[in-house]
Image 1 (tube, rainbow, N blue to C red):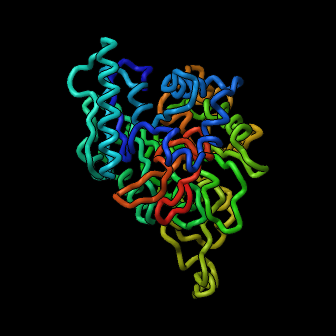
Image 2: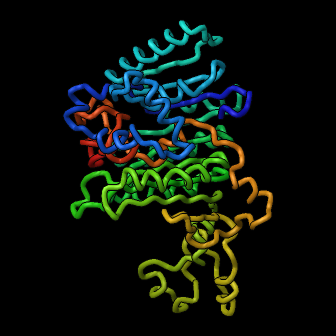
Image 3: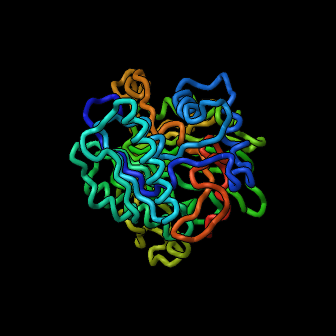
Length: 407
């Protein structure tokens, strides 16, 4: 976002407190940062793409001892330029009060250094970030990065995210939207990425990080993900460089791994076969109930009538949209996606990521877990929201977030 001179707007729908004290009673009680930011604190062989993030965390702790940890608003404030604008939303009354104080201190420090922005650079609102997107999009500069990071306390949060993004894309299709989500056993979590792939965005990127093998009881957060709509073309190459290192440093057992998927908008019948598996098959008793004994008289939504003799032709035809590539920790890719540029194409050259990746909240933070904090006035745990935990540099277990297990 900083590579262009044009100003942009950063929107955080669930901001939290902004800064967290690691020596507080809540943080020392859980000690989650010992398996999150802890292993990275003194690391010397970190990938280049991860260094700006670690430098930012260390700048908050000039004594060399980990005492403070940044949430997403603090990271965005430090990376944004004087003409860029931050719009921060938080529902929890205690968190929004702390956020106001942290932002006030940051702006006072910048003023002492002679850095002054025109107009109100950071605006904090005690309210629903989902609803607030309507009045902010499209932004005056026509450039925006939206971070959507709800607590997923209830099942409706998954639907709210999708609905809010669909409306936001209708208002501002070229915006960049980054969504954090927990990878849990519950059905809503497993289906969530596929639903986001059907949104009307030109391109998408989905990256997940697993730090341990899921437990037999399904309790606890072992994996999390970041889903980015309209991602910068430099992001995927940066993640392929960084994610193997995070697996190595943060992994707890042989189940630690990562995945990276990239693709294009999926619409119509192609949404049923994201990886080009071929035509949809009838579900349940649909074929058995067909008067023509399975010749296709009963069709699913988006499935055209297959006439007799056309089966082989239809099966061999590529799906055309919904290209997807899954990267494994060893650097290999699963299959060749339909419609992806071949070697030598201009698109392939762009994918090589020759330009340095912009540093921001959608970078090193991607696919890392974070500790939870109270939301919507409902106490969840003693762990600070957005603080460091066992799942990655931004934290691990979502302890006690209502209805969603550990984050």
